[in-house]
Image 1 (cartoon, rainbow, N blue to C red):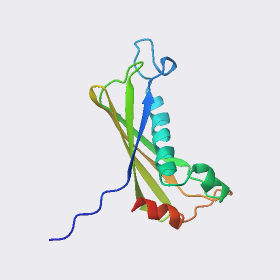
Image 2 (image 1 turned 180 degrees about the vertical axis):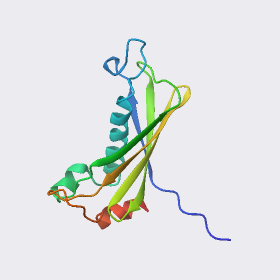
Image 3 (image 1 turned 120 degrees about the horizontal axis):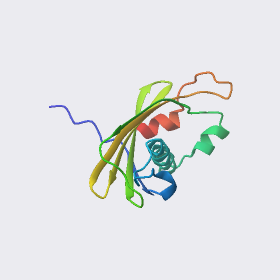
Length: 136
């Protein structure tokens, strides 16, 4: 029997739904989920000892080329949410993150983003080895 694949590194971020992020019904506006994904993605890198600033200083950009969110339950004003992020390789020049947002009553949303790896001129480049080593 083959060994199970090792678990990928997961980071957990906490966000609180601010009043400005809600609609008249007190429900979080859908676009804010993408912002919360970014918080988790940034924390995932930071916890691994990297930052977007470090990558950009080295001429590596990670623009979002695809984003998906599936809303399961409403997040409401003042809820404390936990945003889990896990990275996966898509190709030598693409990286994806999967997200799970949970709130006081369970699962709130699932999502993902796909990022191209580009240089400052907008040309595709390979994902740096120090990043691929973190993905596993």
